Length: 549
Image 1 (cartoon, rainbow, N blue to C red):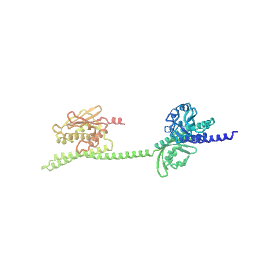
Image 2: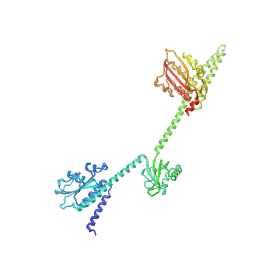
Image 3: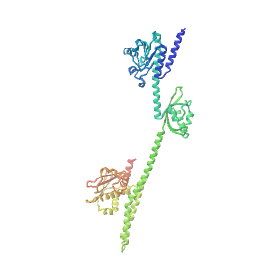
Image 4: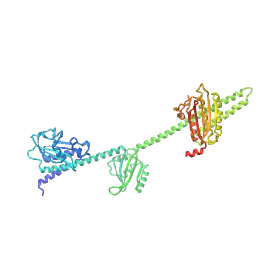
C-alpha cells in the first residue's frame, strides 16, 4: 500500500499537472508552472523564462513564434532573469539541473520588488526540455535555512517541468493552428468563398464560416439539414440545381453549378458551387467543394452587357447621323446642278425667240442629275444597312468618264486642267458601278476644293488607271497644298476634315465603299506638289469573298 503521505503528494502532483496541461497560452502556462513549483517546493521567489534576448530559443527552436519569442513571468515582479555566464552553458546547452548557494546580491532576478532578508540563498536552475531541445528555464530561490531542493523535490520539479515543456510545445502547435485557421477564415472572407462537405446519405452538410454567410444560414445550425439549405435557394433556380446535383451524384462526376440564394432579409446572392466526391470518415460518399459569392462578378458582367448595349445604341445613332450627313454630303452636288440646269432652262425659255434646243439640253441634264442623286441615296442606304452590293461587270474607265462629264462645269469654274491617263487595255471588273462612281466623285471634288486654296501655280487634275496583278488601280492627283503626313491616315476617320465647314464624312464613306469591295484606299504626297489618292479593287469579287470566308 502507498503511505497516506505519498498518496497525498501524488494527488498534489496530479493536480499540479492538470493545472499546467489545461493552459493553452504561453503566458498562462508559464504562470501555472511557476505557481505550482513555488507551492510544492516552498521556495520564496522564482521565474520562468522562455527566451533571453533571443539567446535561449534562437538556436533551440527557430520555429518559435517571433511575437512570443520572450515569455517571462516572475514572483515577485521583476524586470528580467539574468543567468550567470558560468551556469548558462550547463543549464541551457548541456541541460543540467543546477542547485547552488549564492549571496543575496547575486540573485538572478533583476529589479525585483523584494530582496532576500538573508545573504545566503538556495537557487534552482531547471531546464525545460522537449525532445532534446531547451525551450525554457525554471528558476527558484529559497531563503529558508533548511534545504528545500531535496532529491525528492527535484524529482517532482522535473515531472512538472517535463509536463510544462510538453504543454509549451502543444501551445506552440495550437497557436500555429489557430493562426492558420485565422488566415484561412480571413482568406475566405477576402475571396468570398467557403468550403463545405455534404453527406449524400444523411443529406447533412458542414461548412466554414464563410459558407454560412454566403448561404444566409445561422451558424449555430450544425450540421445543416439539406432542407435548410434548400429553403435558401431561389425558387426559380431550384429545379435546375437539383437536376444538376442529382446527375453529379449518380455519375460520381465533378459538380459545378451557378444559382441564387435568398437571405431572410430578401437579399439575393449569386453563388457558384463546385465540388467532387470522395469517401467521408464514416465511409459515406460525400461531396466536398467550394461555394463562392459571385454577386459582384455578376453585377460587373451585367454592367458590361449594359455598356455594350448602350454602345451599340450609340453606334446605331452615330451610323444614322453619318447616314443623314452622307446624304446631305453626296446629294448636295447633283442638287446644285439640278438647280443650275433648271434655271438655265427657264432662261432659254424666256428668250425671244425661245431656244428650245438649249432648253431641252438643260432639262435633259436635270433628269440626269436627278437620277444621279437617286442612285447616290440608294447606294448610301445599301452601304449603311450593309445590304448586298450590286456587283456587275464594270468598265471602270467609262464609269470615271461619266463622273468627269457631270463635274465638267465645276472643273471649268475652278480653271482646272484635266488630264487623263487611262489604261485602255483594262478589262471589265466585278464592282458596284454607282458606288465606285461615288468614290471618284468625292475624290475629284476634294481635289478641286484643295486646288482652290492655291494661287500662283497651275491647277491640274490628273486621273489615271492601271491594272496591277488582279487589282484595278485608280488614282486622282492634284496640285493643291498637299497632305500633312501626320494627319494623312486620320483623313479617313469619320468627322475628320481639313475643310472649313466640312462634315468629315466623304473620305470615310469612300473607304467603306472600297472596303466593301475588298480593296484599299490610301493617300500619298505628289512629287509635283499636291496629293494623290489611290484606290484598288480586285478584278473578281468571287475570289475576294472566298478569301474572306
